[in-house]
Image (cartoon, rainbow, N blue to C red; front, top):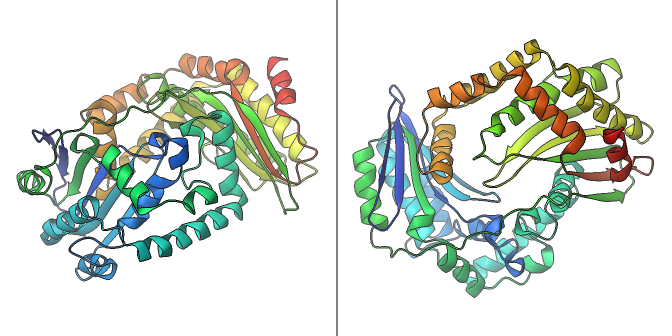
Length: 420
């Protein structure tokens, strides 16, 4: 499998990887325009725009967009994150040109019909309401807000209902004008694809766009803080975030191995101690996520009101213990899990296309899998213990609590336990 990468004169980038033996392909456009690129009055508009892409273009109605892909047995979808918005499809190899035409159409030619804007506004407001009714969704929004307080990176992707209720057609068009230039777009494809054919299609569809520099997002600052909301729920939801490296920092590999060993699977420390030994919860996990200039290691658990205090203090204790006695066997197991998860995921053309796009966005190129595996293998037990010590004692922290949490310790109390 060979990765090929090109760029049009206007800055539009194309990356692809042919996967022999496949009869299908994944193809999409990744735009560097997510939640952190919004001004405060725009919060939620990147997600709103993603929804509107499927509501009609100059050539196709909303139904025709869906039928064009589903008539050939494919599927089309989109998502908005804090750093990108993606529009992608999965089709059989003979329908790649069709998928490219549809995706290009919805990205370049949305009509923003006022009637469809009102329909989709209602859908998004329902989505916001559903998120607030889902405790283990909303708690992560609160945790993000506390981690990056009063910054674009800390705001919810869906946006507040009052903003979504006020967005106009002009607001949507204005965001496109600001952020959907050729230099902010990456065409990525994997599977049964022909790179030369993709280049020709990209030139025909996107070659006419004039270059325009995108707005540089505000540099992230991990602030830390606490959000706590008491509510009658079956479970008390606990989420702790600690500042971690961004994805351009090689320390991200130590961070990911640490979080895997701490709470990434059934053999992890938190799962074994908190769930298996003490029976304090059904769900507990740790994970590390990264952005361009920052990252977070997050620990989440749901437990009963009378056990949330014990769960929180044991979590801190386990973090401190990991700094002292994380074993070579645990690190080796976490490395194996990390590599296997990455390599197994890349058997899917959709996952591979997304990886290609994100790497081009991050680095401007696609590092080889061998290089990535080598960096994972280079992480030593000493590296992980050093990272664990930083997490246990020094890293700035944020806390979110939701449900029957009156008995839960405050962030200040957890900080005292960290320092003890």
